[in-house]
Length: 344
Length: 217
Ligand SMILES: [Zn+2]
Image (cartoon, rainbow over all chains, first blue to last red; front, side, top):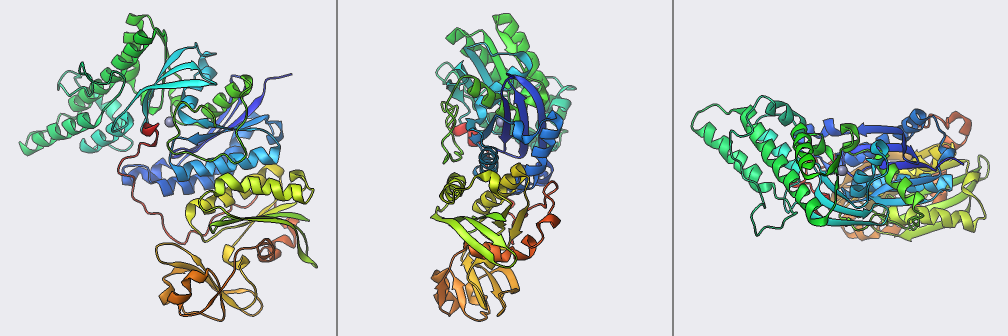
C-alpha cells in the first residue's frame, strides 16, 4: 500500500496555499497571493486578504490536484492551519478544509502554522533529526523553537517581544524609499553596501536580557533616526550602507541566539523557516556560524520557506504517520494558537 | 433532487436538507438553526453532519448545494459561502448562491437584518415574492419602508414600523434558488460558478498597526 496522500490548506495571512504531499514527497504546491493588493497600504489588510482567500480557494485546490495528477477522492487526510494568524483569513481555510474533509469522508487535522514551517523541510531534506532547533522568521513571526518531537512536542524558547523581523524589514524599506514587502529590496540594496558602515543596535543581547527573545523595534527606530538626521543635515542617505548595516544587525542577532540555543540545549541540528529565511545574509551567516559550532544547518528552498499549503500537508502527513488523533469536528481557529499545540 | 442549504449571513447559522422538485418546491427533511454568534466555522459542518444523519442520507447523496451570499457580517458570511463551494466542488455537484434576504419571510415585505455600525441590510419584495429593490445597507431612519417589515425586530423603533421577527430558513433558501435549480444540467459541476458574497461595503483598508499574530504564541 502506498503512503497516505495529504491535502494541506494554508490561509493564515495573505497567501492562499493548497498543497499535496504523499508521505514525505512533495506532489504539488499551488499558491495564490493578494500581496499586490496590500502594497499601497504598506502592510497586509486583513479584510482584503480574507476576500481574496475565498475567491482563490476552489481554483487553487483544482490547480493543486492537477499539478499532482491526483483526484480529490484519492486524498487520505486533510490538514489545515488552525493558527496562529489573522482570524478572518484563517477561518476561510478552516471552513474550506472542514468541508473537503466532510465531503470526502476523510479525517481533518487542524495544525499549528509554526510547526508546519518546520515540517516543510522534511520534503527536501528527509526526516528531521529530533531534537532539532528551529528559527522561524517572517513578517508575522520571529520564533526560536526546540523540537523534541515534531508530531507531539514543540517548545517555544524565545520570540520577538515587539516587531517581527520581517516587519522591521518592511518599515526600514519604507524609510529608505524601497518597495513593500521590504525583504527582497533591502537584500538587493545591501549587496552594494558595507555591513560595518553603521553600528546599529543589537536588541536584547545584554548579559541580563532574555537569551532567546528578540526585539527589532529599537533597531527599526535607530535606523529611522539615523536616516532622518542625515536628511535634516541635507546630506545624501547612503541607502546601500544603511540596508547592509541594518540587515547585518538582524542576521547577527538571529543567528547568534539560535546557535547559543543549540549549544545550551545540546542540539546539533538547526532548521530555518519563514520568509526572512530567504535573506541571503541570514543564510550565509547561519551557515558560517553553524559550521564553526558543528551544527547541521537545514534551510528549505526560498519557495518553501514562505507560507504555502505543502508545509501544512507535510505536517499533516507527519501526524498521520505518528498515529496522532484527528481534530474534533467543532475545531475552530485561534489567532494566537500557542506553539506547544501542534494539532488541536 | 436532494439539496443541502446553508446560510451564515446572520448570527444564527442555518443548515438544512431538502428534497426539491420543480413542481413540488422544497420539502425540508431536516434543519438546524444554531445561534452560533461568531462560531459559524466551528459549528457549520457539525450541523451539516447532523442534518444528513437525521434524514438518513450520506453526503454522497447530495445533488446540489444552495448557500446564502449575504449580505451579512463578512467573517461569518464567508464561512458559509466557502463551505458550500468546497462541499459542492468535492462532490462534483452544482453550488447555487442566493441573496440571504430573499430567504427571510415571504410575499410582499421589506426585510431588515443587522448590518452592525448602527445600520441595517435591507431588500424589498412585491406580492409575488420577487425582489423589487435592494439589497442595500442603510441607517434604519433613512429607509423608506414598503409593506410589512420582517427580520430583526430590534430595529422597529428606529424604522418607525413594527417588525415581525423572521430568520433565514431552508425552505426560503430553496425558493430563492428555484430558478437556478430548475435546470441543474445548466449548472456545470466541473467549472462551477464562483460564489461571491454580497459584501455591499468596501473593506476597511487600514492595515493593522502591528501585524504579528504569531508573536503572541
Ligand atoms: Zn509563516
